[in-house]
Amino acid sequence: MGFKCMIATVALSLFLLAGCQGENVEESFPMKVEVGDLAAVDQNGETTSLGELNKGKIVIADFIFTNCDTVCLPMTANMSKLQKKIAEAGLDGEVQLVSISVDPEHDSPEVLKEYSGRYEVDDKNWSFLTGYSRDEIESFANVSFKTPAAQVEGSNQFVHGTSFYLVSENGVLLKQYEGVSNPPYEEIIEDIEKLK
View 1 (cartoon, rainbow, N blue to C red):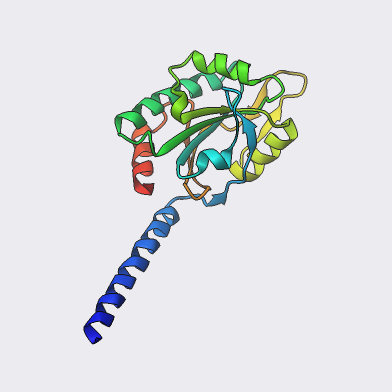
View 2 (view 1 turned 45 degrees about the horizontal axis):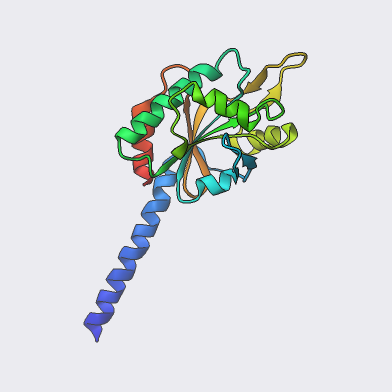
């Protein structure tokens, strides 16, 4: 009887320890921001949301717009490289890439489909989002990602974050990485593996 109790106590302790280790992994990251949900439409015209895409997946997100004449093109090319590296590491089933348009009025699903077609995008785990209002995306970027998303007055250009953002399966923003020049691909892969 005493031996069974001891076994049960050890098993319970190991179970609790395993649960705590998962939390401790997230605690080791520099940011801890709850990411809200964002109802959207993807490049294929499918209704979705960030929460749905995040369900059971680690998310790497960025903010772009298709008329961008500066940082978005290299960011999308870099995200395309990251998608390949994630696949090479055998992690493509664990990770969802999400590019969120900050110009929903121009970036229709058709425009995003054409834009994504310029890169070797695998739709299976990379969604380009639109279908919300400009006010919604500005507020969402500010609150959930602590980054601006605003139109430059008198221009068709937008100010927005140029990072790649790591979001845990629990919907928590944990870290951001350089997205425009020399993203730290190996560090991103290592961080994804830590969270698995």
